[in-house]
Amino acid sequence: MYVSMMAGVVALLQSVAGQSLTLDNFRTPNGIYGTSRPANQPLLPGDLALITFELSGLKVVGEARAVYGVGLTLVGPDGKVLVEQEPRATEALLPLGGGKIPAFVAVELPIELPAGSYTVNLRATDYVGKTEGKATRKIEVSPKRFGIVRVTNSFVTGDTAPNYALPGQQFVLRFSLAHCALDPKTLRCKTQLRIRLLDENGVSLNPKPFVTEIQDVLEETTRVCPCTYPIQPNRSGRFQIEIEAIDQLAAVPISAKIVYPLVVIEPK
Image 1 (cartoon, rainbow, N blue to C red):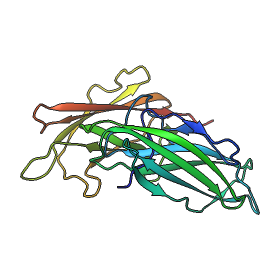
Image 2: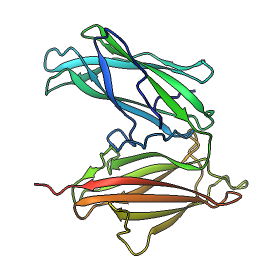
Image 3: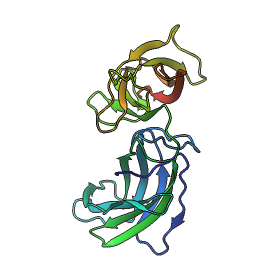
Image 4: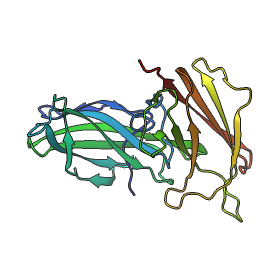
């Protein structure tokens, strides 16, 4: 079972005295460059566990080059080690100096992962400076239920994008539906999506929402249903993309909703 670190409730539990590398400025975003998740929001089984942070104290050699790795152990609520991953050497360029780089780890949470509190021990290694740094994090996983997971913004090329844009840029908001009810004959879900574009105060910018129906089989390995929504901002400002999903095959139709903020900047 390949699980990772991130949570709605994530707190730095301890720092290791005397360590040469420092792991700090932790975030739990939607996508590597996306907005932080709300505090006190646990992860659903089947979501993407993502944590970003700054790694400071790297030794830089040659043409602003450093080599580092980040490993982890994940411990379940019962104290059992579920994942043990050794640091893997990664070469990085630090052209602006400072011995600091952004880093992240992202791993899929199994769709049947039990609810509970999980502990993640992070260990960073500087292969040039021969130093290490450690930190410990917490993950809270909620009981499985219908929901929207794996939210991230991307360029049309598929590369991860921030939630900042220029007018005219093209993006694709990617997300997945988890724990859908399935038709017993076709094994397909039947979910209605209602998408609204809002201003920063939550006022709808269009007379009607975009409405579509998803009837698809679940992705074979993750057991979630991937979805996309393309967007091309036409003016600057602060906006919100509201996505509501309604599981129409549930015994009683249930809904889930997310709001993804988008900032469009006028170039100067």
